[in-house]
Image 1 (cartoon, rainbow, N blue to C red):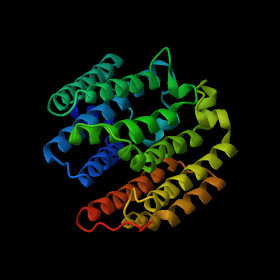
Image 2: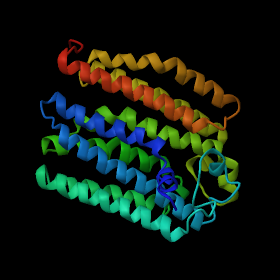
Image 3: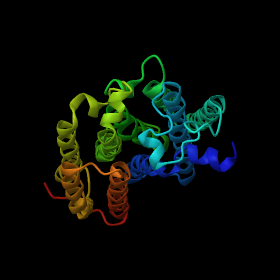
Length: 300
């Protein structure tokens, strides 16, 4: 397998989610006065390797379990070297192991220069990453996929990024990153709603399969509303600056997605959700950057 195919197998377009999670945790540290550009870049690199390893391992086990194969929905929207036999499964597994090794190397260095607790975060993250798709647990096949990615991208990664900068644990970055985590879960939920029929046919009990299309669509709308509501609550309690209300600019696009889902789920359900998530995250993070230079909070 050539480098281009190997790179594509990591699904690099999904790394915007990791960028958002790492940057949110780092920005919450910067608000406290702690920021090292080098540590930020190393954290981002390590977490991108982690995300890539998760994606590749997911492909490995989905092919092994007979879920991903020629004609499966996921093969219609992206290149899938494992499903189309462009590389042996042993090579796919080797790529994933190599990427996990890079994650561990980055984590070990960051633990040495900041806090040893970083390795705990890395260990929990890798455990969740592997159990998400690997035997005998396969979290995503037991309606726990969305909860797992929310925990990793909405809690673990922001907390770890904050810890790298400050050397300490805090609930603040977790609270601030909740909307980011919800959007990551929403991308997966959109994918699973679209694939309900197929996933059910291959005995993959995703959350969408468990709930059914109608209730899954209601959950999608509720989680979107929760993401925006959490930002407003954060502003009210002075966790977030007033500038964070700028995320409401994306609310019309969110409403359009909900209306679309109430009709017929488009083939592009997850990339459309991911595009909204990235716009939301960019505005959210920009508001925190602005607050570093011009802090403005609601008076109590």
